[in-house]
Image: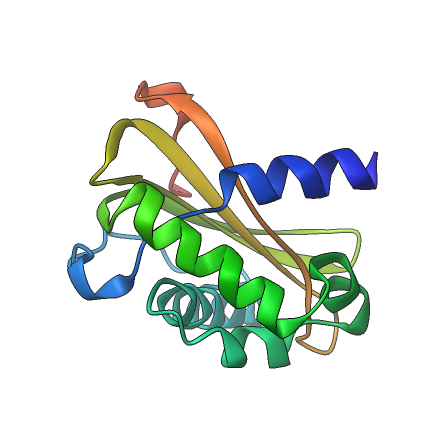
Length: 154
């Protein structure tokens, strides 16, 4: 299952640099806990670094297990650079949310990209209890419909 998840993530995670990204995020309600606030802040920063191909910062935040799943920093950088060419820049952030499950806190960002504006992509960053990234994945949520967007907490 982990191999399938990694393969799907590798195929789907080729996203775009932040330089052309939308600068205004949708209004996100205040996260429920300090851990969720931290996940929101750090998740946004790590995704901005990833989009801008500053992958060293993202790599350093990974747990050793997540680094092992991606292989090497060189492979992770090549993966990201391929994404820049394939999908273009993030165009529109449709939603963000944070949640906590089984001691881990997650940040999910739903967005569209310039070279594939019909598909909604979900970037998921999971943080362990000490703030290390223990999950990093990107997957297509499907075509744009309201029920497929990371819903904002009300």
